[in-house]
Length: 615
Image: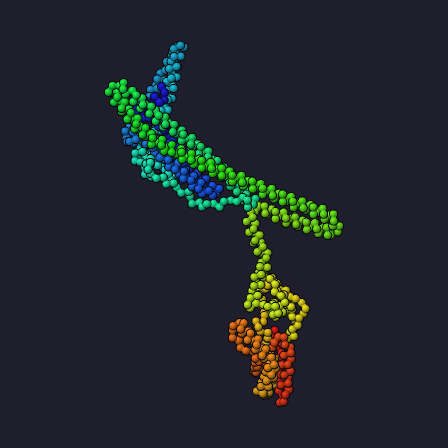
């Protein structure tokens, strides 16, 4: 007795399309595969291709949804042969389970009886009984297998529970664990989705398109890192392709029993239609009922076979996209490996060239340089140059050109900091109120005339002396232009004004007539000032036009106050820089003449005129 015949006897009116374990196993395998696909699309080497990434995830999501459509349809088939899902099927399963248990017990009893007969019968009769026992043992194995199958169906259909238990409950639980599987409105009869329901694929994550890696400008470190990254992605895609092939094989295996049953039903319906002419009315009615049952059964099976077939197509499409991604990663891996070998080769060749030139330099030195001291100097220079060259080659080889350019720029900025400041300061020096050639300036305590203003340096002709006795020392003082940014002050003449102020101070005796002394001394100083007053006023006018500020016209100013030694007389007067010694001498002579004029002005003991020059 075959297994199919026994199932037909044990479960009248019910044909098993698939076991619940196979349905849940297919769902779990599809979910695991889908998660691998979504994990693979987040790899940087795959995420850089936005179109391929989105298409792969969309197809994988569609395959996942179709797997749940098939599972719900299969749950309806396993739960009720007429797709009603009512309690009648539960009662049929209980009865089938009872019949299967009775048959197993009956077979065990018959086998035990035959075992007793074998022990009592003689040799020839014992062989016949032994053959009968072996047949019963085979039927017992089949009966026990059928009993286990029915018990599994009972546990999945939840005959003793309430609500959506069993297989349907497990499917719902799995569907809740994968939110992307939900779509459309479920068909109340089959638990699947209507054909018109829209399939909304899940977005392909929030990953932005990664910046493509450019191996042609990368260094050895970046290439090695990228090589390991691409190799990891390649290995992951290979494993994913293997999982995809296993899922396709599983889908094909699931389709076999359903397709077989559909074909058997179609063949049976055609056989009944061909034999209808030779049967009586009673047989015709029975055949019609059987054809109607077969039609309903085929409709039920189509609700499972259609999403299963669509799932296979979606998985196959996704496999093609994964193959394309794998090929792209393979090409990228080959490109990175090729550039890595080229970069390592270039570094090795460059180092060998440097060492070759070093050896050639050493030979030339030993051959043409006879002086031992000079030879040692050349050898030290050779080691320094070789070390620097090897270092530069290694740095250029191990870091990318962009990184090297950034490091080089930062290093140059630090090394040339003073030069950069000097260049910037140059534009301050040549500004409106800047320095011109010939100006007298004082920088860091050094006084001199500007000889030249360069892009980074300022040249002064040093002047020494005190008071009005300033003379050139014959030396040129060089300052960096960046001195304008230093805390020390920089002094220069106002634009257009080539004059300074000098001061003469003397002390009169307490008994002196201060009114007469003040008038006489003022007249002496003013008399000298009249000789160059026009030049001073002309320079003052030029100064006012240059700075756009009203400044009082320079002229001699005197003051008289009582001091501890007598009457202190002070006179301030402007002098031209070029004529300062001559003017100061004339002023001092005029003051002495005024003091000696009758009536004579008495001076204090230490009240001789004292000249103070402001440079």
